[in-house]
Image 1 (cartoon, rainbow, N blue to C red):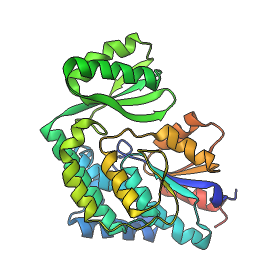
Image 2: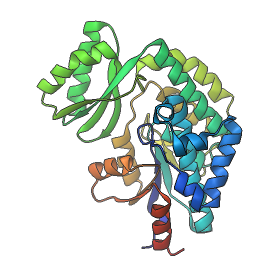
Image 3: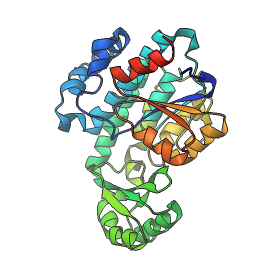
Length: 320
């Protein structure tokens, strides 16, 4: 197998892909991964490595820690590929789901690893604080189209005076709603009555990508203003508009708006396909995004690099 990097996108997952043990085999196998995790520990002032490798799960699953953990593993995988493939490693574009968008921007050279890690840690801290101020809820809805679900959420929000919105348009037939917990509980029977195949409440208290995040937008805007950005070396498709982010100003606007906006993942994948992307390489602990890509466009090729074994197999197929 020879990867056509000019038709290949790197994709990076968001929260939900973390698991205890993530990255341990990478660090044991690849010096570049070991160096990345060690640098993260130094920047953060505590052993994120130990938390990723050994848990406990409850601490790793706290958004304060989940976000930097996923970010570091994604960047570590990029460093491994870059070292192994050299000048041939020239992906055509990148994208990330929610938190993964910051990993994609770092992979594309829009910010340094150290600056990106500090920004991700602050994003996680602020989202943790927002959930403390106004606890929320999220649920995945399977088998109901976005338009119908948007209407149901709007009606419920009008009834309670509290927000409930589409947080993630993940793929055809899978949408995540987010917002006020009582309002979400109110709509569950309505969603099922409208023909949803299944509704799965998520084990979170952070109502990501909803108006409940508005309380932290000013603080996060200050963090964004203090972070040096540059134009990315390759196009990064943003969550908010499903379009390329081409300047520091566009990146700051995107990341600020993303906190309260829908993750338009279906449209993002379609936009990459329209740009000629044939292959998607997911860099993270699981294979969540690869599964979504398959449901969006079965003709797209997919590779999931979530372990040292998977990376070694991929590199072997690439001829290294």
